[in-house]
View (cartoon, one colour):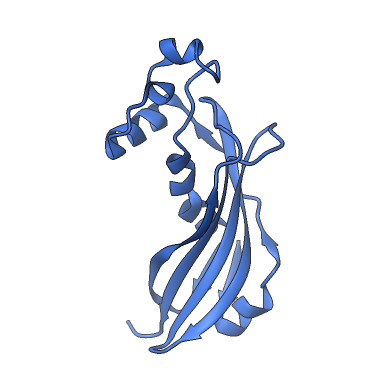
Length: 154
């Protein structure tokens, strides 16, 4: 895990790849839980019998499940000291190049693309995270996440 101390440390790391993380198993229970939380119960995600005859030969994870793991993977490879509070400000770009079949293992690699100081002792970062699927050439997800960190204070 890379530890950053202040804006200068973040800025110095622009362009460096952080990671990869450990592998994370995507099993049917995780897919089903995500389907319940998002009300997206499309058969390609939650019906193993029907999905066996479908285009992927098995159930696949939701693209948004992969996307929802971006903060987990980013937090596994970096920590910023002196942060009072961090917030997700949004996404600049998201792609899902390859499906994630049930039983796949995923890991993340992140690169800081930009660092900007904002008023109120706040720093905004743009971090590109690529989520790899073990044994697959194309990634599951590539996302540029915009985060804001409020520094100092309690």
